[in-house]
Length: 388
Length: 86
Image (cartoon, rainbow over all chains, first blue to last red):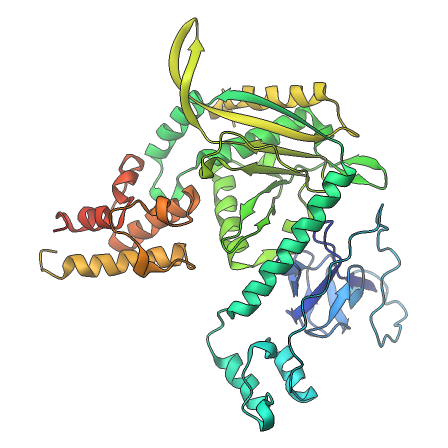
């Protein structure tokens, strides 16, 4: 029997709330298939199963908030002997829950709204139908929220009530605050920057886009992401996670792309195996991630898997960005705005589009020399855009 | 396309598409001659998606070099109606 536990979707996550199970007892589930939707401080996330098998028991109930590592379900794995079935009446933290190197800042729970007049039955129905009773106006005695109120709310258009969105925004702010404070407290950052001539890259992308229908066109951002991924093959120590006082290099390169959320906040989900994707594939995945990040339908692995983050603030018109590393990652690459500037080519001053590329890196893991090698590799790769 | 209300229809459709790209925006406040990017919180990815939606909805081919022609509400209407906005 395999235990499906509340996963950690980033170092800043301490708990999650089960929104709904996507599977029932006795359903078959395959590894990577969506098994549950979980609400975290940042967003509602679809969680994939880590196992292939039959759902034996669903322990956590929709609406329940449990700490990371809590056993939420039991899966009878395919090809494994049927193990002894333990009767479980309540969730308990899994033994293999990884110890944190330091105590994580504990996030304060969302502010309690005024005490609700709601019966347990209505409360349970609200959880089942994914209705937030705190935003409802009850029609029962003394303004109590009735079963009918819950049903009516569930039948109404599913747009998130503003208070829920505001609450999520406040929680996201707290989460970012905790992660960034931890980063600055624990990670001795060093910063490097270099100016990259984007002339060839911009010309290449213009010509490439002439050949592509509007639905398949590329943004130069995917060239930057791909160049970072390929440069990491040359300096793999930047593609790592800090675990229990040591850096552990990742065999796979999953670049996290920082995406701003419209109502405020930031999320940096992974594009898996970034170095192995064609530019067209990267563009499609990037577009899909942006769409889902803003719609709040990211998957668990996209949040837990990034091995480095790329942030680009060029759209906002700034020349450069020196980012704060997202723990447990050990590096972050920043790009500013692509701007036309005087540039010397073969002794002549010419006008070229340039971009400032920066590296924030963890000095416990790498030194400036390796960081410089990495940024040079990014520069060199961007001079051969057709090879990306 | 030359009926007097054709431009209004196009304007409404463009605003609807814009609403899908920037759901938080109050579309009644969109200034018709100011670029979308200067008045709404949209980036190049959003703008590309907007252009794709214009392409899908109106069936027009939009080369990348023509993107600036779709940068404001009025320029979109002019481009799609083939007439200047009076």
